Each structure stands twice: as structure tokens, then as C-alpha cells.
Image: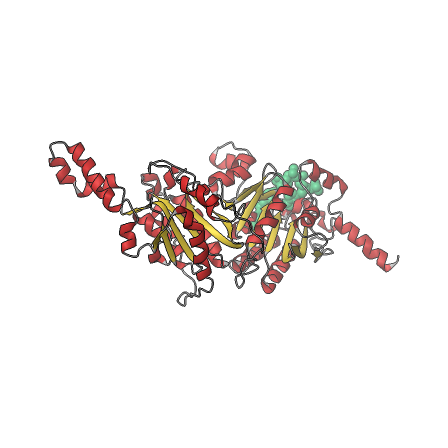
Length: 513
Ligand code: HXC
């Protein structure tokens, strides 16, 4: 046979993966193949494959007669919007996308290249887990990947898209990466599946309820982004990556064009309700400050009492962290602290400035929170802000009470600029509770204790339910009109563009995990 023709044939065999029947089954399930996914993810014609002829070396259980070139994972590099990206995409049509020694080695190879060349890596996961016929070498292969995920953490962005099964120890590679995206109905993640759950805890639960996209988006927080199908997932990843730099030494790309609707400068004045005890959607405030249509919310369905996400200000990527008065009054609890902390650390790792909107009544009281460790988890958010060296600006829209005031990027923990709106209330606690404690005797001894309480509450509110005590002390840098927020934030980040701050020498910090 002509040698060139042999290559063409071999390529065809590799591209066919587990064969037409299995490809058809994949399509019937609403899933694309590994290769189709890579093609859609990357810029047209940019994919360069590495290792398409790699085969496994196993011989047990008839595997020596079941070799498919590529061994169940498509690996290589290409570009997204012209920027270098490394990718691996597991092929479920080949032995269920199961991970063999050589399959793992292919993934490790692109991970190593990604780190050496300072470019993000995107993993498209669709696998039945460890290749059962291979035994321990497959487990070692997983460990090789976990090790690299951890070593690459904070060096290059790592994104995981779950597009099929991801079970057992296999879940820990996505968990070690920066962001997880799951596809509705076709993907699931769990450490042990429904059958094991039933045996051990006698619970009856479906794969979807146990570890589907919705469960992990709302309950566990493992899933940061949900997509309704493969095509939407890949589009979302292409968009998301534009908010991130290539590596920890670079800045996110700066699109030259941006739009801002000027009427939002007046809309913002009407977002807050007259009555300061009523809720409002902090996202409306965020939208009035950032470039049009630039907000990409992370963890939208998890711990809704805090809102985090990427946005752009005059084209430049920023990270937004905002208390959400529309959910549990914006209180900080275990989940919202974890969510906020993780996002802050990603932004700080990758030179993304932080913009914080603060309206927080405090930490959530109760035995549930205390016994599950709100002290440790709340400290995560505190720690994350304290160690962040990126430019940091805070805007206090309304309540900034108690320890939560300190935690939410206060100046004392390193915020560079701290603004307050005229509606800000900055105090140790709300006026009602404060009056009850500090005027207890006067209230109890009064002829009309209720009236006295109200009088003292008003006195305390007069003193602290405003931003001026804090401004007098320089605890906030300026009191600004809501309509001035965008301009102040733009000027602030411009001023901070060359900020250079280094942490004292350490091997690494010890964040309260
Ligand atoms: C080898 C596997 C495989 C695996 C699936 N296949 N999983 N081969 N090792 N882990 C093969 C099947 O034999 C089948 O081959 C093809 O892939 C498709 O599988 P089906 O079962 O027909 O597909 P489906 O009905 O869609 O079910 C998918 C599945 C199921 C739910 C993932 O295959 C399954 O339960 N697989 C085993 C999952 C598992 O227990 N993995 C080990 C987890 S422990 P043919 O030739 O018929 O097409 C683990 C530890 C990691 O991963 C630890 C890291 C530290």
C-alpha cells in the first residue's frame, strides 16, 4: 500500500473512535462526539492533534484485541479567538471513554505543555472512569492528572466541562480545576453512584438527583455553570475564556470595543427602595456600573445571597463580588462565604481587579451555621480578601454591619478605595439591636419602655445609619452619588493600573479550609 495512503487510513481509523454504531448512540443521547466537541470549541481549522495513534498496552480481559488508535481521548492544541488553548476531550465511544495508563499519559502531556507555554487547558469529560480491565495503572494515571491539576493551579486557568458520566475518583480532577461546567440531562458527577448509595445509606436517588447539573449548581456548588446542551456549553466556554488571561503573568485581553448605555447613570438612582429594610436586586446596581451585557455570573444558582461573576469596565475584565439583599437579606453564611472566597482567589491568582458591592446585615445566626463551622468558612472569605494583591474597590450601597463590614473588602484588609453611597449605614449592628443593648437600663426604667426604645433607636440611627461617621475617620474614602459610581470606579481602576504589592515570603499560606 502507498505509504501516504496508509497514513490516511490510519487517521480515518483514529477519527472513527469506537465506530459508527457507538457514534450514532452518542448522538441519540443528545451528545456530540469528542472530536465534534473539540472542533466546535476551537477556532475553525485551528485544532492540532497530538497523539492520535497512541494505543494502550494492556493485555488482560481480551484488551490486546481491542485497541483503538487514540485510546479514548482526543488531545492537542488550537486557538479560541486567536489565543492558544490546550484541550483534551474524552471519547465515550472508545471503551466508554475510560481512563487507561496511556489515556492518562496523553492528558498529562497536554497539561505539561499548557504549563510550560503558559496557556489555559480545557478538559471535556465524558468517561466511565478508571478502565476496569487495567486496574491499578489506571488509578495511578488519575493520580498523575490530579498532581498536575494541583501544580498548575494558579499558574494557568483550568476549565472542566462535564459532558457525560464523571464518577468515582474521576470527579477530583474537575474539582481541582478553576471552573466546572455541566450539561443538563446528559452529565452527572458523584463519588459513589445511586447503587452504592442505596446499599450504604438506603436512600433511593436517581443519577440526575444525586449528581446532575442542577443538583451540583444549587445544592453542592460543585457546578459553576450550567449549559442546556453540548453546543451551548462549548459556546459558553469560548466566551468565558475571553475574561481570563493566558496565565498568572499576564492580564486578561482587553477588547478595544465596549458599550455603555448612558441612561443607566440615572437608572441607578432608583434601584434602592425608600425603606432600607426592603430588598432589591444588587445585579441591577452592577449592570448600571459595568459595560453593557458584560456580566457573566458564576455560581448563579448556588448561595444566592452573594453574587459573583466576571464583568468588564471600559473593556477590561474585573471580578464582581456583591452581597444580594434580594436573597436572605444578603446575609453572609457558610455557602456564600465559600463561594465568594473561591472567586476572589481565582481573580487574585490571575490579575483580575475586584469590584465589591456591599449591602450586608451581618453573618447568619443559628446553631446550624455555628455547628457546621461558619467561623472557619466565614474566615475563608476574610482570608481571600486579606491576601488579594490585585486592585480592589468597594462600594457600600446600604448596610455594612458588624464583622461582615470588615470581611467585605474593607480598607483595613487591603481594599485600595472604598466608596459609600449616601444611603450607606456603617455600624457595629442595626439601630434597633444596638439601642436594646446599650440603653437597656434606660429603656427598662422608662415609664413607656417601648417609646424609649424607639427614641433610642432613632438616636443610634441618626448617629450611624449614614456614611459620614465612617467618612470622617477615613474608613471610607468618599461618599458618592449612585450616578457617579461608574466614573469613580473607572478612575479608581485606572489609578491602580500599576499597583504592585507582594506578600511576605512564605511557602504558602494556610487558608482556613
Ligand atoms: C472499561 C468501560 C468502563 C470502564 C464503560 N465501559 N465504563 N470499559 N472501563 N470503567 C465500556 C462498556 O463496557 C461499554 O463497552 C462501553 O464502555 C459503554 O458502556 P455502557 O455501559 O454500554 O454505557 P451506558 O449504558 O451509557 O453506561 C455508562 C456508565 C457504565 C454508567 C458509565 O458504563 C458504567 O457504570 N461503567 C462503569 C463505571 C465505573 O464503575 N467506573 C469505575 C469507577 S471507579 P462496549 O464495548 O459494550 O461498547 C473510578 C476510580 C477512579 O473511576 C479513581 C481515581 C482516583
